[in-house]
Amino acid sequence: MPTLSDLVARHTALDEADLDWLHSLVSDWQLLADLSFADLILWAPLLGESGWIAIAQMRPTTGPTVYHDDIVGTVAAKGERNLIDTAWNERRICREGDPDWSTGVPVREETIPVRRAVEGGEGRFLAVIQRSTNLSSARTPSRLELTYLQSASDLAQMVAEGRFPFSGEEPILVRSPRVGDGLLRLDRAGRVTYASPNALSAYRRLGLHADLVGAELGRVTATLCYSDEPINEDLMIVASGRAAKETEVESGGTIVQLRAIPLIVGGGRIGALVLIRDVTELRRRERELMTKDATIREIHHRVKNNLQTVAALLRLQARRLQVPEGREALEEAVRRVGSIAIVHETLSHAPEEFVDFDEIADRVIAMAGEVSSPEVAVTPRRAGAFGVLPSLIATPLAMALTELLQNALQHGRPKRLQVVVESAHERLNVTVWDDGRGLPSGFDLDSSTSLGLQIVRTLVEGELSGRLTIEPRLEGGTEVVLSIPLPPS
Image (tube, rainbow, N blue to C red; front, top):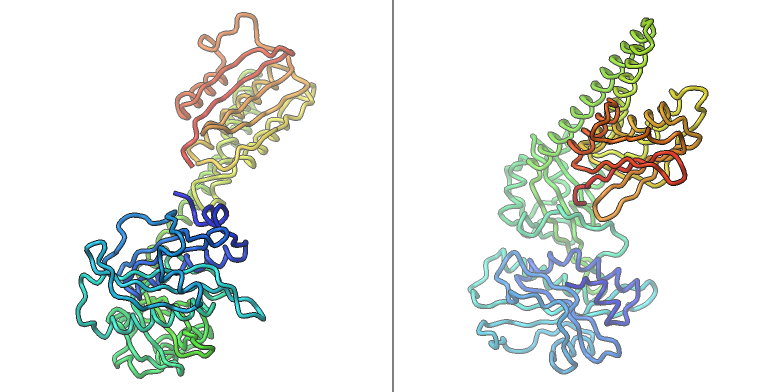
């Protein structure tokens, strides 16, 4: 299905600023749909204003939907939808007309012109919202439903006047309170005129024993949550409904999130909506995850320290050995342990089990260059980027890279040694080539007795489910290619 941006770019004359305004509206219009108990469809004028195209759609979570199928992308010629034409031409909200029974269900149609606020001007009309209400379950509305509908009417008027969405405000978070979480309606003075049952329950958990209706929300909230410490200034702004902001308050182990939506109609503030959500359990789980994350990082840090200790002991033992073969074997073990330690050190600083492998690769490459014999005097180079890799790939890949570089420096005696990285089609291809002596006569990977190559093959084919090929280069030297599948992004 095409996106809102695609439809606007292909079929309308709206500019970038218009598109940004519509994105802001659509990101927050679930609020209007839920308060209205209605479906919303956003219609934009086609090029040349020859008709309309539906560019976005929202269903209510508080009532039955009218449209079970997607409408986005539908085109309507001028004259097909009279209420949309009237709202656009007359720049006003249209509510006239009898319910439509064409689908077998009574549907009340309304249209709201969408205006973008322009500094120093009257604004610019961009589109029309069609609001469709399923009347099949109509009954005498409750106090809650009447409050929702009145609030929806005020928000619709703000959309038509270019006052909603709020320009210059931060984008609304996905986990912001919703209408069903809890709603308070405030008057101009910040006093509560209506409190939904969920909102009242949230304040009960904060420690409120009196009724909320008639109370000044800012003062009540401050008394509950800041009796022994300075009052949070954001709290007073949000709880009084003076600005479109969010904040959280905590009391007695309960954490409540508040979001204020000032209602500005006809140029004056008539009150505000405050959406409320009890996020106690959510914050508790987030803290648990943070604690677990910190514990995992600490484990990686300690593993790195232990590996470095093992490497130091092996290095000390190697210095005491008089047998060259034994000393060389221990030095190789030191490098293998060191490559694993580098991965764990990086993981100890990473917020998740993913690492920037370019940093690890550069350290492994530098380590290989430092321990190469003086007569070789070559510094390995890297071309291309590994990117971010999961730790399950990073550790064996670092070990394999260490072995290949060390093998090339020790046996190939090259003047140039390069690591080339390419990523395509969810595979990571790593080529390590040198211009050294090349492979011995009759070399066969399957029958090779080299411990380093056996380790590389086990890591690549066994742990990484990849492919390993070793071939001579036409220009001289050796080329090793690792082809490793990557998990879907």
